[in-house]
Image 1 (cartoon, rainbow, N blue to C red):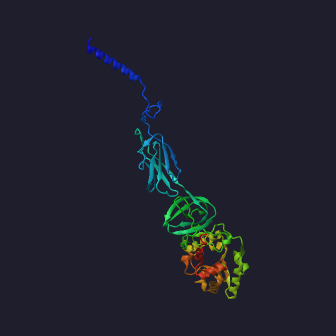
Image 2: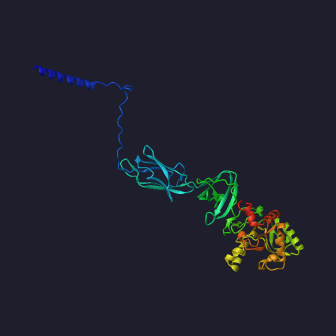
Image 3: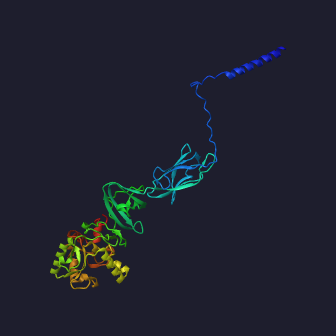
Length: 435
């Protein structure tokens, strides 16, 4: 064998030996690493499937209560495409500006409104078909409704309740009350009028009234709120405030406020006890001053009698219906009170007339008679006031009635006389119409 042939064979043998050696040698550990640490495997990509993602949970669910934390949903598998265009909250006025985020896992998304949402309002949550899984399978378009709270919260304090007419600025009634402890009620709406917010309450002592409050259902204490202007003479039926039998002198009754149909004073006595014709009734609390007035009038040559005194709710039904038949409904509203709205039901009002005379409204002006003139000048001294003076129909809500007097006590009568206003104006200005 030639020398060249021997060298080639030796080199080939060496390559084989070295090759076998390299296969059996264990590599040295990396610096700073354990020799037993396993080598990590690359992360396997999710396996695409043909199943569309679905919603696993919704908070709040359909019909649930929405709060400041917003809406949270979970999906059956990782998704993408969740943003403000695919996950929305909307009301009847449009889409609500919100921050939408998707958890890094791709399985949970949240939507948080960027403004305080109005009280007792219903919203629609929408997840559109823009959401899909990693294989491109789309979520079926989904929507459901949620609502903000309808609970009105009252902290201890003084609150004013309002009612509005055919426009928000038209006040038709209000009341005021002080609450000594925390309480809640249900409500159904929130609105702003000017710079103030109002919550509509539909349960409890404030049922049917709007109270000052915030968008989140918190009622606002407004002890210092000013008494608004005297309500217009609307023909509505709102419950009067101060209807306790002991509040007879400060109850506001007009075409707006009314007494309950069961209001019947417990101390009615016959008017004959005060020196007048009998078979009519007046409250005992007015009897002493009535008797003193009748005596003084008689001494002055004014001979008074009773045309009408206490009337029950049912009695006022008959009286008002009689005026409707005689004059028509529109005219009856001006000259007679609808049931529940009459001062006669208080038991402290009398329609006077001249002894032996015709009904006082049949005179051209009964105030020009001896009896009518004397009462107009002197009745207030004994605690009696003409409820519907001449030229004041826009303020009293009824036509001029120089024969109709209401007993309010000597102190109140003197104050009203000094003020030079009608009784309705004075009572309202003192706040008696609202508390």
